Image (cartoon, rainbow, N blue to C red; front, side):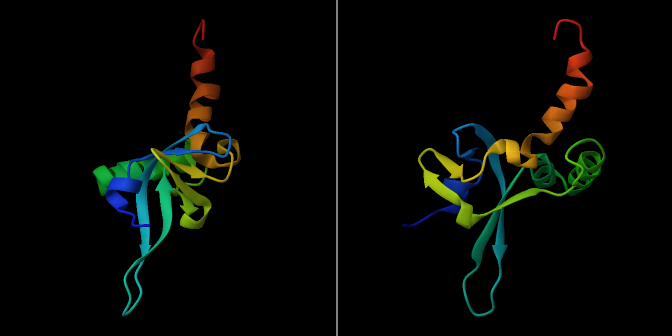
Length: 120
C-alpha cells in the first residue's frame, strides 16, 4: 500500500476505537536512518503541534500554557504509527479518546470557565 503522508495523513481526522472524533493529525515524526529512507514513527495531535506549525514562538508559548492549565504535560500528544489504521476518509487509533490527554484543554475550559457562565 502506497501512502502519501501529506495527502493521506497530515490534517486528516482521527477517530478513536469507539468512533468519536479525536482531533486531526497535526504533525508527523520521522526517524532518520543512515543509509536508509526515513521511517514514520509517530503522528502528533493537538494544539501545541498545530501552533508550532504556524510559528515556533507561538508553539513554545502554547506549550507553557498547556503545561500550566491544560493537560499538565506541555508536550505534543504522540501516537505510534503502529496504533493507527487507515480507514478512508479518516484514521482510527486503537484507544479511547477519554484515556488520552487530547481533550484536556477543552475539559479544563469547560470546568473552569464555561460552567460559570449563566445558562451554560
